[in-house]
Length: 426
Image (tube, rainbow, N blue to C red):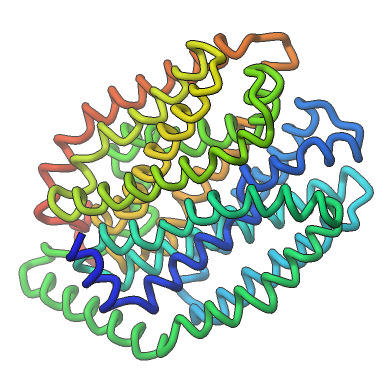
């Protein structure tokens, strides 16, 4: 823990920037939007499955666009990039406050997912992976603290603000907070970004020159096309996509699952989020330490177990205490996944094209998160029980874990030379 505090003190501004972006991503995250699901469904006359389809459509479009917008971080000044993201998120919040048609609702969901769920976290984790060669595991785990901080604070605030001023008016408050609060603080925390990026480019050039002198070997970044040709990727891809699929589906339908099926109150659900957040923090920090010691590849077969057990808890009973066990296990899985998935890409595939590679990965995860609300909503509309849907999720997670067990030795064997091109350096 002492090393964490020293690391945080030495890099407090850049780490604070990463954490702030993760906090601000809350406005486009599923758990945040789900607190408005009853009001939105009532306002637009949508069933669970129909709202799931609207949400999935907006999210899928976001995933497709993210392939382009996500890679722009490799080309655009980070300060301009951040200002543009949160301007888009503020516009989405304002449109949510006035939307009257389902067509506009789809566009609002797209903007919320693009500029909320997708790009802020992508920007934070790309920045941590890019600018921290040493201590990357700690850097991504510290920045990822912003996710549970948002998840601990915003549910209670949302319930209170909506009760005080109404659900549409609350989105206007969120828009003002983004423009007047988040953007200025983010730019302040970035500090001397020009010098930071110049140092990063100098490090990359030195590493690549050293690689050329060694005959093409050494630490050289893969391109996105080369990553897509790596057969190891397809063994671990189901596991990499599992957290976004399982987490998004359960949290999107949490009012249906937690309140209507399990019989736990909405107030108790909101009150359990701090426990979820604390566990997310602890698991994320612990995973960062482990990754710095043994590498992200060795952690792959283990990070899905907490979420798998969490789904199992939902299926064993309706006692109120089980809600807290479920949230704690979900928090542990979320914390481990945030840290692992952020450290995995630069460790294995290098840093120069990290924005493009992470854009591809994030787009896949967004597509995964787009599929689950619609899929689960349709299954519930068809009359399937929570036990049936939960059993499917557990089966998927176990299969993904098995594939990771098969893939890990191949990644570990190449870990001493991360970022080696699979084709000759050109």
